Length: 221
Ligand code: SAH
Image 1 (cartoon, rainbow, N blue to C red):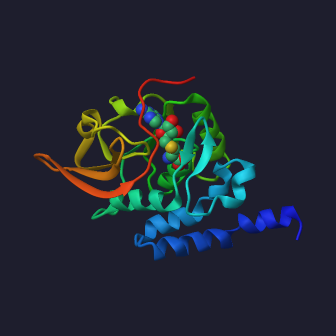
Image 2 (image 1 turned 90 degrees about the vertical axis):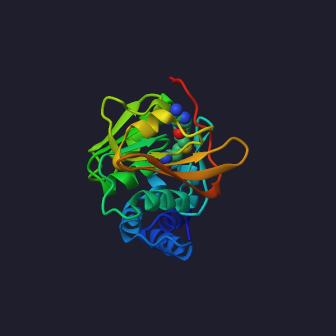
């Protein structure tokens, strides 16, 4: 088989279907999340040389010392956001990276902002998203997401793709009542946290151990 045909095989809808099967085996149950991930061609978001590995359950380099999260962690975090709810509503993603998770989120909500502090990554993400149908509504911004997006808050869902040292107060404050924030927290050891805003307070839940790049402040051009 020549390289081109192999390449097509590795990035086909069958390969994606196998990824979805694996996510089910790993415990992902939310059918909307699985359907969204089945629709988004993950290989579009990684460098051509890595496209054949795009559907493996692994993070991959995307340039600027950053990584695209593994399919499982993307599915798991969005599933947490949807727990007990039928929609994501107004959503903020912090850490656009290559735009893959923004694309999956964009299949699940029409009202989404994704912010990235490294400009070249944001520009690449814009190109990737434009290559897929029906994602024109995903709004990308070059800004420091640790401060959230105060001008468009409150959000029903906030998802952070980089590990914070502690839970950022500004992100909690930008949750709407009933809203959910999911993010990795910690310096050496990191854990996934889920914070729900009720009418009166914030309810914090510590979940499994994870591994993410750090949430940094300031912008890179
Ligand atoms: N969701 C991405 C994952 C990218 S990795 C994907 O699907 O590819 C995490 C990203 O968070 C990196 O691109 C990093 O530059 C970005 N990041 C880190 N700190 C940030 C901050 N304060 N504001 C915005 N983006 C940030």
